[in-house]
Length: 261
Image (cartoon, rainbow, N blue to C red):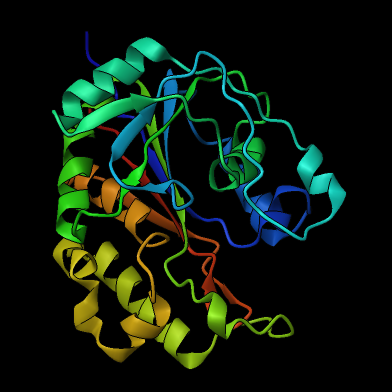
């Protein structure tokens, strides 16, 4: 029987406050729910599980991880206890290879903050995948390619980070981006829309604007998994194309493919 390839989503998750605020970003995430097919499961690749090895969450039911500090009490009362899928976790480990392992990890805010808008019922299994801090961008891209087969099995690949993420330069009073942030976000967007994914993998070649936009890699790396799992025939749509606080990008990408396999 023919199967349609599942879409993939990268969200710029920005501030955790978007989990509880009805703002332009959360409204866009909510709108995604109306155009996405219901997945069998979701593999969440969040900037906030940056670890020493590649791991896949194996819980039968996800626990909540409130990995943010100094925010209103309401944010720490959000509950998104989606089920897990231990059998699928083992399948993903087998796809990724001998370096991957299982771990009893819950959901961090990089995952639950956007997912509560996109799939608010929390009734779809969510499995988290860590970012191995010892791997190069090219190696993360290669792991993404190993996940490509999941798209044929009804699994949604969901990546959460920020193309531009420099907390040291944040200006909380600024409603748009600094010039370097706008320029880097645009360069990455141009490369993705041209499907020049190699340019994104080797983002450091963008020079000084890359160094300021990606001072540490964890918020950029989730995007590379989707680029690795992309098909040449994927249609890419950009959403939330905005920079805020000077040095934070909210830009997201939706990869869709009407082909059957």
